[in-house]
Length: 264
Length: 346
Image (cartoon, rainbow over all chains, first blue to last red; front, side, top):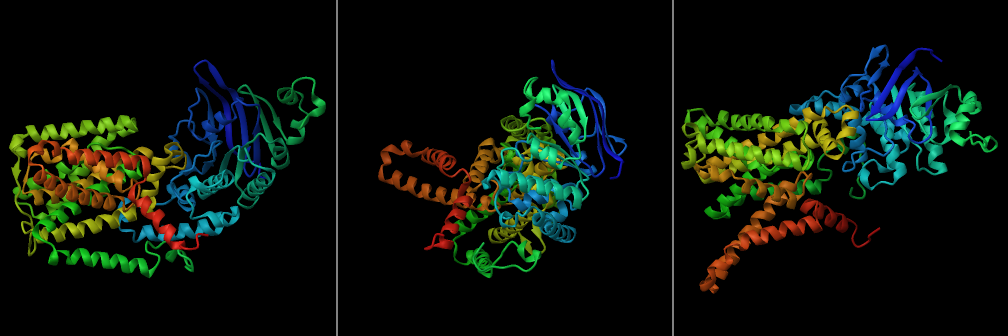
């Protein structure tokens, strides 16, 4: 594996009033790596993703992407850099079709302006057709959602909506993908499908992935690196095998005395 | 999608009209509209001109409120900006072919200025801000005597375009008809391309829109601009149609009417504006007949029937909001989907 750091988080702190959501977090994501962030509820996992995708501005610390400080860029500028994300509670455009949702993922990389859109000619039509071809042949095919592409997203079952959200993120041709609980609320089969998609994206497209997930089985099976948060602090970091044995992690998850029944 | 329709390339699949059948209907409809003046009375022709103008204005409002989700209660004011711009320019001797797009551009500019609050405000709060636009523009028209003729209004010089003179009702009808068709094509094209998708993204989830890289504020302003441009064009035509314009043609009452037409037709549907305006004008004609008949039948109680129109329109809007919030366009879609499979429903 390439040992180049693609995202580096330095001493990140974020507080909402008196609540310290993140407290001096430092971690990193290697290029091509699948890194998981785990921790109990309220540990600050989603906050960390929100800081990277610039929903929140941290009070202290820096987020460095490919050597550049992105801590103070506007939210919409992040997409252009190649950082895509999905959300814990699905944030799709419910009134649009699956295809339109995925097309929106490429928004920043298209160049047609309002004036060529009005006549739907020249650049617009060329871009639209190229985009459609790419989406159909790469993304829809990969995620196995051919059958639903013309349906309105709001009417789809939960598992499919999660997939469409991943599809939209992939349409951004990301270099880094932030996945916030992609398997939450799924049954075993759906979880396995999703894990397969994530691994495919990671290995075939070479996308570096940060995965926030509660399903420990999945995390330990598919990730290369695990970072454990508790109450806004990082308590452990390392390869999954080490994390499973880490005493502090076991305590955070299970309490002091129940090591024997650990799911880790 | 109709059964038995298979596409072999993406270009065909992205077409607006997927079957010859639909195209044939559309062409039949357009020919009917074009030939309509041959059989219609003068009165009907001017009503149809009004319909065309309202359709253009409603398409504009539909872009802003239906597709971008920004409620506007100041649309009539932007129509007014277009009307006055066009009339003043023609009065100064500018040719109509320049005055018409300038009316749109001026309205778009004013619309963008009043769209700036959308940076911070959304939903009902933005609606209130657009009411401010309505009152400021109306006030300006009333008080800027030297430019707009103040409360007495101003006389509109008829525009000319080559051999056409738009004080001729028939020629104005055709101009409106062509522009209404063009407006419909434009709105459809916007919606199926990059900008339109960004508009809808902002309506559905503006936070997610930002994450995928949509510059939310820029597209909100753009939506205001496009919407007001349509309003400006509608205004220029309305000025030609009315011949004398005063601030009273562009009140908040008119703004609410436009919004009601959009709701009835279907917010966020390309054809919503057309259905809504059609329904509105047909209902208006019917009520006119009903009121006249009631007045002749009960001449002693004329005062009872004065507000019948307002009451019925109020009820219609409430009924639509309860039973078909997506408007006639959605209803039409349901009906079509039903008959497509009839009598075998699965």
